[in-house]
Image (tube, rainbow, N blue to C red; front, side):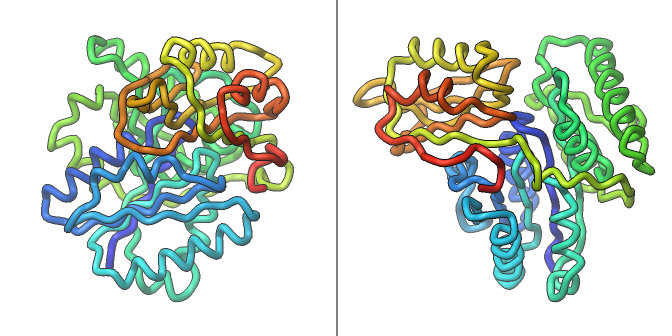
Length: 330
């Protein structure tokens, strides 16, 4: 039966970037890999970012939301059933950044999935520059880490000294263990559980350690985030502007407090007739680079978003904006 791995991480932590490295490592080892992109939103940009992995030894599947949590969970289970019959050695699941991992474990506990998959690794990606979190976000941090075999820090500068990396690891260790204690988790992490290496410097030994880290049983107090959640996403299609304008508007979106707690701006924006740029931004940084994908789509994600204010920044440069509420799962 195939092994199933879960890669967790909050919004903008870098899950997709890591999966590209992790899946390529597994493919190079001779594994047949399936990747399942699962998102509560109506569109999944990360699927497009993984297209270059697709080939004889790797395929990428997708489950999106847009019509409620219950329907999303049903499609998630159905997709896992179909993938278990496809001959993969390993299935990697990348969920939403606001994912409660109980959904994953609940799905695997039910028939027939409990007989068709072997639990593999839970790898938690945490931004080394993790900022302040709301109570809901802190709960999700707990949910996404307490069963993890390893925590992998992202956004570490390549020029950092070993001592600076250790300081970053200790800072995240204190944050995570404090959140685990608050939600009465039975789990605590040590420095040995955290991999604090610039991802460009990850060695084969590092990847082997990550791939064998497993999952650790743990329990915590449950918080029903999806019922009264302030998380939401706003979608803009056909977005066109110069790169200078793009940078300016992204900066404004994060810095204007009336926009709400914006956590991520991600997608594809056309900067001229022949150029499409990929944008991936959090409050800690912005990455913009050319891409070959043909469709312009931009997603703004966060907590308690002010639709009117954010539309004022992006709508005039977009052909279509998605109407509706910004509450997660709708």
